[in-house]
Length: 299
Length: 266
Image 1 (cartoon, rainbow over the protein chains, first blue to last red):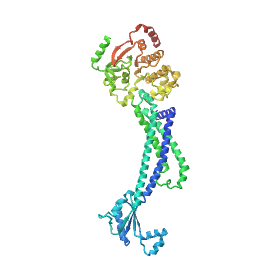
Image 2 (image 1 turned 135 degrees about the vertical axis):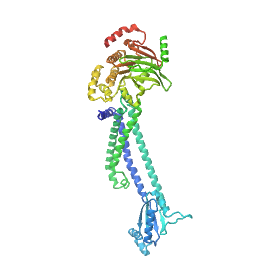
Image 3 (image 1 turned 45 degrees about the horizontal axis):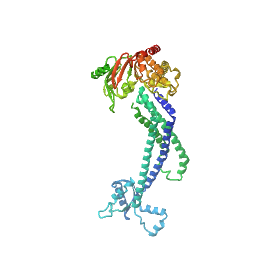
Image 4 (image 1 turned 180 degrees about the vertical axis):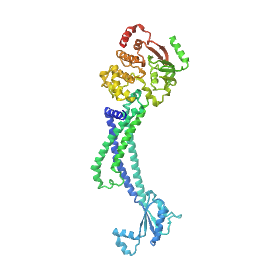
């Protein structure tokens, strides 16, 4: 009697209230569609921002006469004593010179006769914002201004301050804006769906009242409404996801080959996105119906 | 008038009596004041025995509807106790109210049918609510619809029925569980006299199966014709409680019609 009965009740209600049901479904459809487009966009943007932020590094230049032992000691210091280090890459004099040769500038260095390039550690922070801390740890500010270094083998620590500051502030703004937009969109979707559900329930509050007077328990009344919400959410969600799929295959995938932003590595994969959207639409509709009903159940 | 006042005074002085054994409804010193300051009921006490047919009469605002709403536990009394079938309504928690209501049949002035369901489904709903099996529904619903004379309207929707027919559906729904107590709040309020008689007959027939019936009404002629127990309320107090009362003292004019009605019923 129970589950089948509730399902039949839900289907009956859907059929008998075709227009409000359709409105609710359309609301879910449009919302999911917008979210489905917006979420990957937010992710691609923040992904791109993160990629830029990944380029923030500090260069630790050693004295030109530093020995291998000095280099090892500095590496130990960087790896054990300096906080917030993500990774440290050692670039020896020779490697640096080779890199210059590969860049086609070998002739200039050959003129010098010696290799003027120092051994270097490229230190990436665990978080781009911590770059300053690393620099301060390796080359603390001296009391009289300027900087000292914590090991005599270190000549200088640089982190391309101009670039770093710019990158950090710009990407922070981009990420914040995106997060704000995403939050607003989610709130709007929830309110929109809640409102639609509320309207269609309001039209049926008398029905609920009668059910209560006949002696129906709250859950006996609520289950069909919740199932109705599940059906509406599932239908709207599925249609939206189908549309998204078509757009992805027809428009985005061909473009992705040409535009790095669309192909950004951080974008959620499509099946996961679909699953999340479907789940959210069903859950929101079902919860919305069940909760909105509470007001009318107080008879 | 003097008699009325005396009654009022007496009921005001009397402390809430203990529930009388065997009574299906027992009001003990019940008062209901609304938060707005209006008085719904003021120290009302009466008892109704199983199997009785009782009219609750009074002008608008006399407390009839408040009494009904208290009986279906839609509101709580401010003072006093209400006992139904030996159980104090106070003890019934909010969660248990639906189960309590299943033991009542309730008929309303505005029928309160589910607009999206056919006659058959409306009546069946009362059984589905209590977890009735499909077989039970197939057996009981046509039965009760035959009793209420709706056999030919099974698949009509409420808006395709006349007022009298809708009220019959409402009665059928109220009685399909065979509750020990049937409450009717102005059941003929929206119906013409002719149709009202039909509904009253139906209620009487239900009463004859042993069900206690309480009818709140201001339908003067109907009460006069039926000659059953009458509890009259005025300003929230019981002003009259007669075993076989009329609404007013107009005996002669109702005699012949009464005879016709009784002939119909029995």
